[in-house]
Image 1 (tube, rainbow, N blue to C red):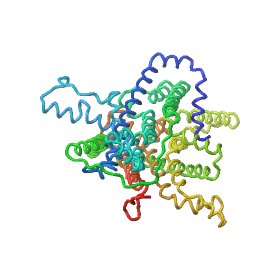
Image 2 (cartoon, rainbow, N blue to C red):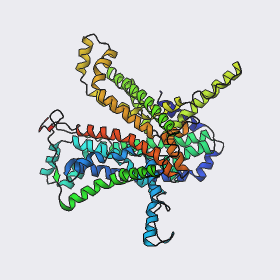
Image 3 (cartoon, rainbow, N blue to C red):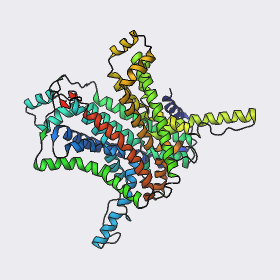
Image 4 (tube, rainbow, N blue to C red):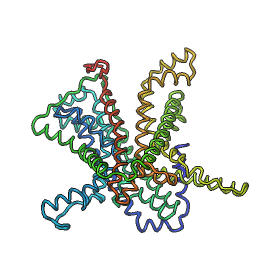
Length: 539
């Protein structure tokens, strides 16, 4: 119910009158919101699928120079928020930026003598978002390819399938659920995107919700726009289920040999290096280098004055939200382990919906009931005691933490549930026979075993909170800024060099979970003996 409250608040406002505002939106900007959002979703979905799947197959099944480096380097763009990469490339590629200035000086051109693509456009936004979000597909595709049995691939080889046909007819169909899951995550993040599309002047549902709420002061119309975006998300999920039909995907062998690695030579090796290097270069190395250069050359004028306050706000919010999210994830996953009734399982499924809901929708869905609660409380205090308490709920950091937990609970829940599922039930039975209660078993048996996964879940939520922008902008208290909000405000004022300091700090924090993910993936393949560092021929 905690997670469902924002969704219920949004759906309730669908049936409220808007006094002509909705008809005005429908006749002016709604079509543009819909077309731009659809274009971003389709473009990013195709782009992330091609890049993520192709690079994952290369690093798992092929041997070429730099393969070990690319295994973890391809995850690095996850550390860069989309709005940060938008700020970096805009400063570099704009008319007054270093690249075009250098071109004009070298060629003797003047402005207007040459064509240069506009990065601040719908196509530019789609390209940059794709280069940041493809690791979602790469992450799950690589895990799926690592888990595939060599026996399946050997059968394909005996039937005359070469490496390419084996990839398209055996490996990809078996990995379909993972690929769809990765693309779905990328699409959810695309629909949640606010900073980059607003900075580029691209109208989407997310920017429309913000503009309708704050620019027009129409919370009902904003809620109805949020409902449209929510229905868009639901439609994507239902579409995937419909296309899958009744097909199911299984690995029918429990034998896991070391995966064969196709040695690439000559132009094939060069092509593999280029295919893996370009996404890392565009999605991480170039923007990080640009941000570092800008931060050193100019940086934030408030560095050392208020910058530490912004960083402190971000760290406090991220720490509290991650601790609460991990604690709730343990409660939910352990509750299912103790009682797997339909009621409990359905409750956990509802709790996992938060990540599929864009931050702007969560923010509007939370702000509406809590603003009503504050208003009701203040009217009651005014009538009975002649005083006004102010915005106790909707004007404090409490509402931000609540939004973060609703939004990112699924991240920690998935990690904790997977770890808890690996603990054999016989351990529970042994602990109970020795006199331990359910709580004692969780505290003394499961928690020590899950310590690594709990830490990983907390770090993932921590970094997601550090990067979250739309919910933070809508719900933050007055005079309360985070690093993400600081970077957004400076970039909105075209002070890109000053925004580099906050943006770079967010990127640096995001690198840690990327390293942890890479280490975990390397150890994830069945048959991998981590204690001896060798691959067993059979498991």
